[in-house]
Image 1 (cartoon, rainbow, N blue to C red):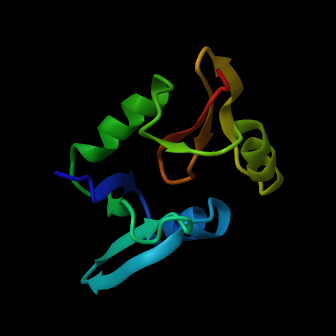
Image 2: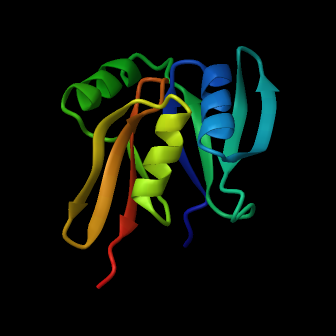
Image 3: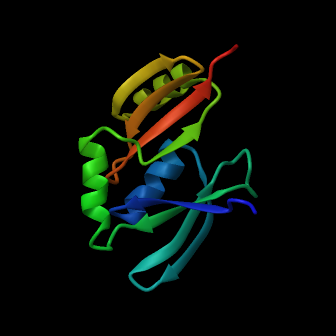
Length: 130
């Protein structure tokens, strides 16, 4: 068994596509129109055949209250690995990304939390040297 897809619920697929590609640096894997929405996935350019992130419309009635509750409590919807949290934080701040948690060492990991502009908090993390 393998994980091939995971999703993030977004309020606007076009805005999400711009943020996840132009700002975070992911690459489009699939962008297939399906009526009002699209089957829209992105991947890491370092692993084009790896796990796909579906930019899933949050139009289900339960999605928006769920997302709002997570944001209100400061809970990231998902987490992405980076090589260096400080460097990635600085790069993203330079691109105008708003962070709700600056880089913070938490024992074996360093994390930071950003606002993806689509209704989610996203954590970036890296393992600390032993």
